[in-house]
Image (spheres, rainbow, N blue to C red):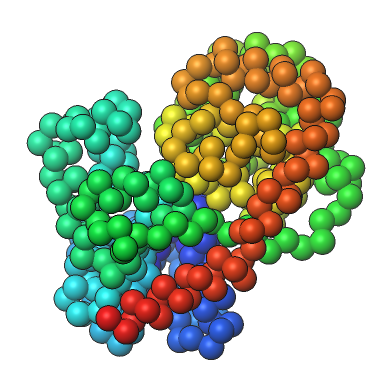
Length: 372
């Protein structure tokens, strides 16, 4: 179960097909349930979907019923999103389900609906009022009833345990590296993206969470560096306005949504990947950039510091501080030896996240849950 699926952009839209392809290739029967704006691309397995154009209430009910119907013939349900609908559908079908938890769904819902504007920790300590309390209650019920919960970081695992999930029912399983094609020489890739001079790259959904405004404000303080942004989302128009306000039209380009293979090529072509998020867990794009041999300049939020090690394969600053972010970029661009050292360490730092290893462990978790 995944709330998004290609051609959508985002971590679940990358992870879910990888899992489905791996399990199908291992001889397991696989069906996908997702939501989409139109008919999803064909796959080697069945992809069932509910239209995202439906009114929210109708969408939730239809998705839950679709999950119930498909789960009734399955041994186990694996969900990377739609937790409430997956909980309802799998429970009604009496089929065990495994959750891939990538964030606090209660916090995300409160922020998405504009009902809470504070930070993650404030939310955990009762922020957001009655609605937020209801979201937290639903989150806890959904997770506690899962056969197993998988988190990409120890940071998120600790929080799941605080929410009442038994420690033995929560495992850390990092996001796998992408299966990389043989990448063209970096000079060719830079030419294919029309990159000139020092260039930073971002890829992902353009949302409030990513706090790209901080990155833009930092960029305005550093001469001689450009930024290319791949992705779509609700924040694109506000970000384009901010680019104009800061006078960065000649240094910032929006590329729109790109296929995953092209994103990896973009990371390879860039001098560094950036992440200026206010809150995160363990983003897929961080692993993708490192696997492509590109250092990451990021905020130290959530589980990011578990994969980006300051001064080893990237640089880290605290979130929300454009001045500190600008100083980090200046430090990176002003020290050729630092750049080369970080680049040399990038790919080796994520070798342990090879797909065969990570998805093989996931397969064992699913098989164990199916026997419960």
